[in-house]
Image 1 (cartoon, rainbow, N blue to C red):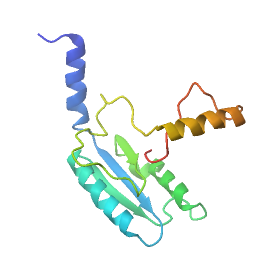
Image 2 (cartoon, rainbow, N blue to C red; image 1 turned 30 degrees about the vertical axis):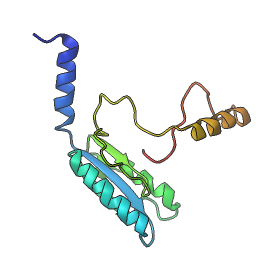
Image 3 (cartoon, one colour; image 1 turned 60 degrees about the vertical axis):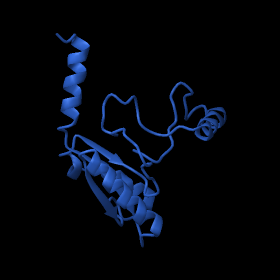
Amino acid sequence: MMDGLTMIKKYSISFWRTMNNIILQHWTGEMDQLGTLSSANIAKYAKKCGAKYELLRGNVFRPNLSPPCQKLYMLDKVFDEYDVVVMLDIDMFVRKGMKENIFDPSIQGIGMCTEFQENLFKGLCRRQPQLTNSRYPYWGGAIY
């Protein structure tokens, strides 16, 4: 007989495996070799995770906004059919041998926070205390 926590974990694992998830990447302009390689790598990872993959090209969100702001298109209602929408920068790669599934709810958070980001955040808290709060973490902007 399973205890309550084991039952919840078993249910949540089977549930996320049936979820409708997507990984997005975006690029404006002519795609370079790094972007092409990243796109292929992330598309393969999405398939491994049971998710869809889409590379968004051009100014898909608002034509007057900069290319990095085009990633906000992930919030558009066109993606409402998905349970989880992930946007990855076009220079990101999944390392060989990676076993983790980004959509697995048992993983405690996603993102990247290195010593470099921590030092940047501490400096920002000192310089702009009205805009920051040291009690909340800062995550590097490679995954949204």
